[in-house]
Image (cartoon, rainbow, N blue to C red; front, side, top):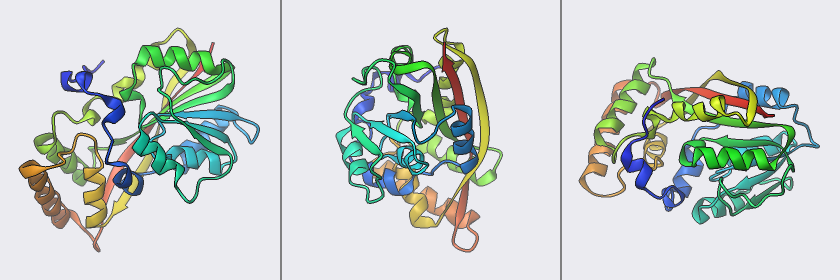
Length: 260
């Protein structure tokens, strides 16, 4: 398993995205329809199902599942991110938000059909979070961990990642976060655990590329390094743009397991 950089262990994850909610909301990619279809079918979710989207951030995944008719509780400890989610104009009535942590959601035991963590589980205490997920799931309920991981087989996407490695603050969590799904695969609290992969992509103009980059928690927010990263991104855009756009290519990893 990949080793988590020391700097990421000692920082405060809950406040890591404070001040970034607006950028995060408008610039982060969604999830491919094929991945959502798979989760709905595999976890046998319907309009009668209740799920929690833990570490829901600005509600990107919460809204996707709610739009499919699922009842969703978005769990988010960061006030800035949660208030942005709550104020979104497309929030449907079958979606509510709650301030809580992954390791202590405050939800009733055996009350959920599925627990989702989209682009978030790498910020949790894995063992404590999985124990909490097991507690709040109904017997036979499902855990779903989902990440958009950059596909370095694409040259633009590879160079985008290399630019971050050279200029961002500390290590990019993208170097190791895929391995953070491993605790679910190895947990004796769950069974039938597996990883599934889906293709995804995000097309952006220059403004969108800059917003996407600086929405990252590890991007420099001030000073010379921020300007260097901005210059590097502009150069990268000029090198690869076609018709005023570039495309970041992702593999969407979906880890699923069932409560024993």
